[in-house]
Length: 408
Image 1 (tube, helix red, strand yellow):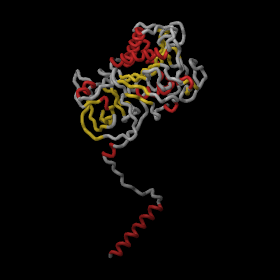
Image 2: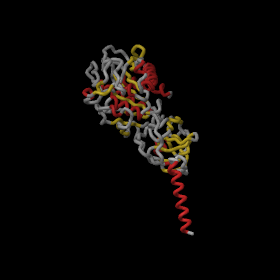
Image 3: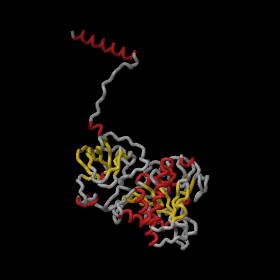
Image 4: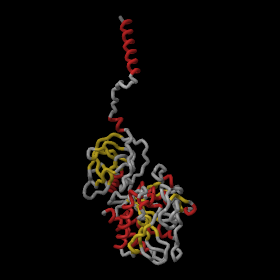
């Protein structure tokens, strides 16, 4: 009986195999494979396109295969305007911007990011902006850290986080001078969850001997300036002009940048400083790409090369149809101009002289590569006063403009 049963089984198996082969396996069915909750938690979230007007968390990490330790607790937002994203990295789309004290259920803790539930959706928020302690009306995120014995050195007088160019970032491959680093400072108190990039114009040794593409797509400039219209490449970083009293422009832009940094930190903004010394080895493309990925706006400080004490103005996006239809300009030019208008309004409120209508159209490398609100602000020209008191007034005006833009 065993022999007959074995033969019957073989015959049945052969028949099934023949049927499957004859049908090309089209009628073959398979049982679905169940994926456990643990396996799902280890899947890498899909990276989506960067939000056009995001406010970026100050923890800058390079995500490969994030692993989250399972947990289930309640955390609270520890910043005034904190982004919740679709994935645990700065490329994740912003789902919502939450206010201080908002409670969230946390389901996982990773390196730099927490996995949370928001409106029934799995989302992610920077660990720097959540706390397990329930907020009260006086406690701030930094006082909580101090109570826990943690360092609050990321203040105006403390250490900063170095931010280097990540070659995987969009447009990073188009930069030529990339060995330097920007510095990220965090406000000591009343943090707004907003990062302002302050770019002291010029200040890159050897920058004038290197060229980069004017536009990401290789097209020609549509306006003249330091580089003439029709050119497809421009100097990586120009040396800048010299004031009538012999002071190099790059020294004055740096002095203003340092004043503006202090005012921003006191007001609760986090600050990304492109440079704090005479030289930083980052060209204009590299500076812009770092700002795109680590800040919520990008403000480059300059003085014009004329000699008429013309006053302040910003470089607006040219009203050229071809240029405005080129990405990333197409998606962001209105934000650039809006930031410029706010800065001019702030400077005007501080009593700063404004040139003409406050703007001049210019095709710049900076705005051609920018994916966050970005502007080149000219604070005067060769014969303009650049004493310490004047720089302080300019910094106050710029702060007022930044507050206006972000609704602070």
